[in-house]
Length: 440
RNA sequence: GCGGCUGUAGCUCAGUUGGUUAGAGCGCCAGGUUGUGGCCCUGGAGGCCGUGGGUUCAAGUCCCGUCAGCCGCCCCA
Image (cartoon, rainbow, N blue to C red; front, side):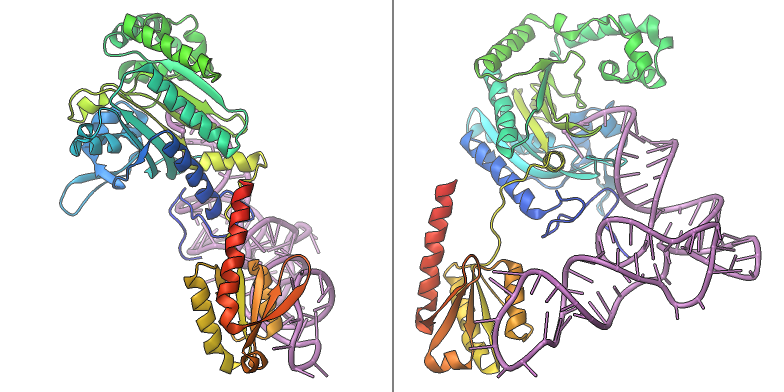
């Protein structure tokens, strides 16, 4: 094999691969459709941004001390000497566009959704890739905790519609510029005398990003940090009030959650609400979505101070979870309604014309291009899953008729005038479509 | 960035203690009489055994490097 997809990136194929069944484009389309339907029902509008941004945008928004910025960005210099970076997350680009195009003038609250490829230079593993897709939303312009609840219910509703059972919502508050420095001090004070008992990683975090010490999984760190002061006890009055209100909204909406006082997300811009959704069926990489409030981000990116909140959901991990659980998604029926078989050269023009007209009428139609015998054309038709076959041979041309053969259920075939063929299938297809919609 | 395991046809894999022209199933293509599918039977195409080096009379089989994949750590979706 000469070429392969770049490391830890993948192709999504037109058919279901025997091994990675989730790499089937029909599943992706279904997931995206479900996501878009929900976003629309919540009043979110789509935004599309470039796959890359100036590196500076991510340095400023995500934060220099984060793993993403320090070692996981796809950064390169373009021909104009600019440092560019493939987006390692979806929020900063959306906020950049919000600021650049003054979207706040459209509405005081702007609700956006996106479906975007994300790039991080990581070592691959089950459920972790260098290119992955996220579906996400951002709501910019309100600090109402009811909006936090809306965002969370949107995410949870998506998993439910997808059919992922038993997800777990983890919730925390990471405070604001008023209370975070105070908590940080308390944390540093607690950790300083215990540093020699902690891992090397955590000693580094102590200097660079102390909050990250909290979610270390190293046993030494866990032991050393027993009894560590927790952020929820150090929130300022405003943050406390916000968190309390959010919890009562979630309770009122019957959204179960578990508090996780060690939940610290990977971006520096989060304030107040932080959440993560995990699916225990997955392996080590079991987070299928996460997000939080970022009340300072718009200002950092150069806009007027505006609160906001959003989340991102990993497409691959959702599909992977479904496969792992043996749950199948409802998929579009991509098989043709009609397969047209022409017998002999003198029928090909008539057949080509019928194929053309059927397609123009919106009837999914396919045909044979390898001059095969009827039997082989039928096999081909069968493989494609065509509902009907239209057979045109010299005899039919002479009589001005075509054979319509039913390919599913009971065998049945009739002759109809060639001039009626398009009309016949158009009606058949329309009535089929109607009955399908009733099923949904 | 670190660690473990793996690398043979399009796919899933066999390949005996190293020994002649490397196999199976599925898939693909075609045939099983003249214009009727799904099953079945027969045949065909398709592999520099990931790649480079080494050991040996002899390497798909042993050793080393390298690349890629998988799984885990870190971190995240």
